[in-house]
Image (cartoon, rainbow, N blue to C red):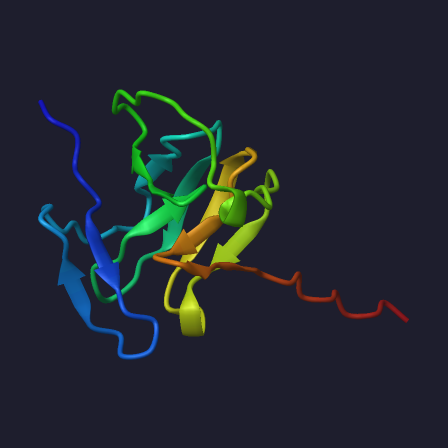
Length: 125
């Protein structure tokens, strides 16, 4: 059994998907991914409508059970991920939950994912 290859990239301005010589895979809610360059692991909470290339540390993320050669995160993508935090794609198009923190930061292509802010609880007056 071969692991899926998350190889499509999305132009942040146009939203068009382009395949860079790899098979594009549509993410699905519940999919588990891991970084190829650090310890980061995520679960897809809300899937995007289009194929996207989710990256961590500047490198495409792979299926949780895929073998990785290792490496170090790119310096421009080394802000880190936080355990238990949710990250949203451009325009809120998808959402990832970090299940294992790491040194690399999450992105779609070169566009960093935003940390989702927690909703304030109502006052109990």
